[in-house]
Length: 127
Image (cartoon, rainbow, N blue to C red; front, top):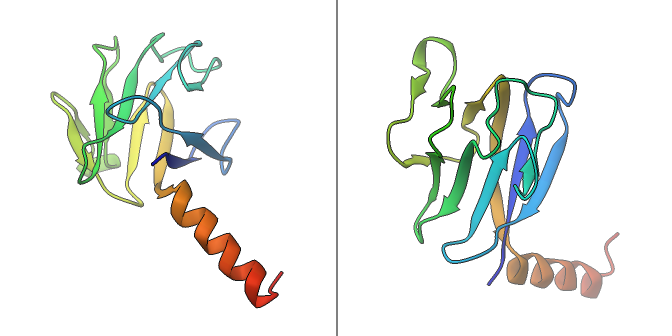
């Protein structure tokens, strides 16, 4: 069952942009960094490492992990912000920072659930 991770940019030139990325592998993972092969490549952030962090599905929740980046990965905002030292559970709606880029986890969905939902809408004749 494939999971789609939804992330919203909360700062910078891409502020407000929503990206949907299919998590791959086992565990299902989305890597974040400055260059490919990261699934989310953010080339315009000078504080982002080549392979900076990853979000992965633990089977019970999404986890955020720093990949030994130069500038760290942080969860929370402002006074509540804390630097990650180990993989940490991240909740829907929570904001995290990689380099100078702030992102919000907007959940994930199973393609099977999304497909079933679309079929139900089509059957009901809704737009």
